Length: 310
Image 1 (cartoon, rainbow, N blue to C red):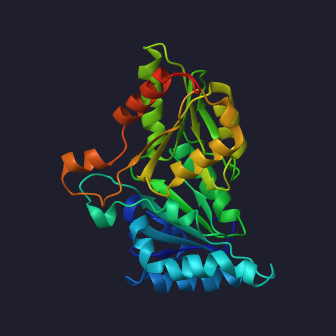
Image 2: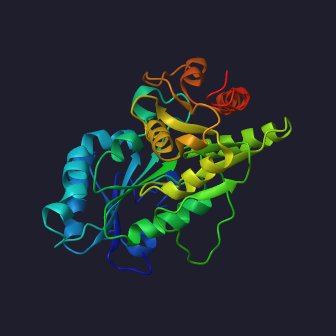
Image 3: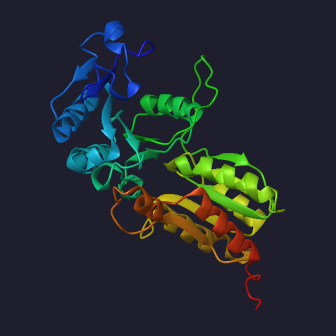
């Protein structure tokens, strides 16, 4: 915001700094650039769309991704499509920022990950940082982008060394978080941390695991994923969303279409069950993907007979 006066933040309780994103910012930038709104996600998302079309760069604080449901029309039917509908004559530099996922005992209406829905909304870019370093670099890139970008911050994110200086991370550039030779884990958001932890445990068993973090789902670093799977011949996809029609299913299809002959074992998916998230901790743990479920999937794929053998 110091760099670009066209950037402003709009959302519920942003002046108070709810969740810490905007803590103290109203003192520096004033109420004209830190705008509190009523509880009307559809209303302030629509206002932000209009502002973006007229040269400003709104950052919409939606708090949690489940609140996007009531604003899908201005997001999916508006911001994602306007540039195409106008033949490129207008830009829509707009960021939707929210925490996403299940943080524990928040039950069905506050625990969703909406990225499967958002990646099926052509015209919308989708960013899923797994840690603080990636969050800073990707958020800066998203704000400077001329298209609408949804930035989903994991509610179970991890700390990381974050440089004070300015830096950006290109959209569409995944990260190889760990190198290995026996199996690839493609993991999203909080499951990157779980995958890395599982990889450390599996190393003690003589299993060498490579961990790929796409970082952005749209655009997707297809080349990084395919190169890793082609090298290891095995893949486990860890995706914190329902199993049906999710990101894991898309990656599985990509791998099957492009590097099927390189596979030594069936593709494995570790996802949520296809049910709403329960309040009960034991039931929530049953539904959600986890480190333990990743460990099981990797062990199964490594012990599977080579494809074509019995």
